Image 1 (cartoon, one colour):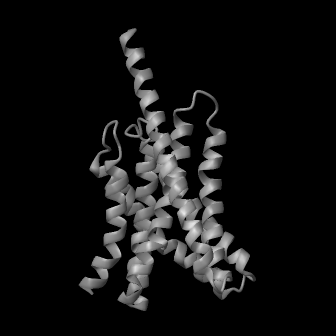
Image 2 (cartoon, one colour):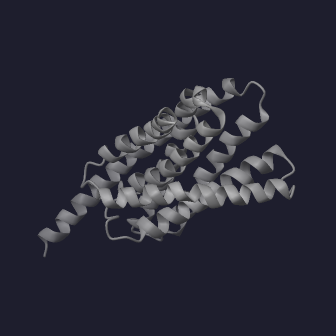
Image 3 (cartoon, one colour):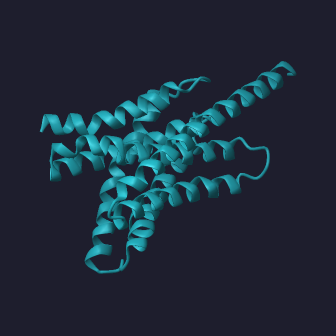
Length: 227
């Protein structure tokens, strides 16, 4: 059991540390990061229950619906909801990159609990595969979600567009990811380029968030110098 717990926790913790330490403009309070991580972890259980009901009631009738409704819609909406109400509205969310920290934290909390439960049910031999696919994909969906939340919170114009994109883009990417896994026989050949694209997109958003945070810091400095 110790081996399963270690293998289940390690990938998510490593990725969370990576994105947390990439924050160049004021590291977020550990207590806030832990809180959002735990909320993400607990989110697994109500979602599993809803998915169980959808399955037993035979509501989902196709791979497409399974990928985009049962999995992606439920998971990304509730992760977005948690990030929005526990972090986005909080005063510690005080620069654009913070969205990436909290988006990754909630998503990796979810991914870590899901990973542990999967390894308990199916065995330790799946640990490497899950460390390379499901856990990083959840992290990257969270990074992309957080990027748009950060952009929205500190945008000079209406933030509604960015809030919509903060849910819509991770939802679509997650749906595509699950659809590849569910519907394709030789899914590895499609998943590999998709994961490369996902990593490129996520790291590009990290770079853009750093730029936005630097610009915001300069604006704040200029504002305070005029007081």
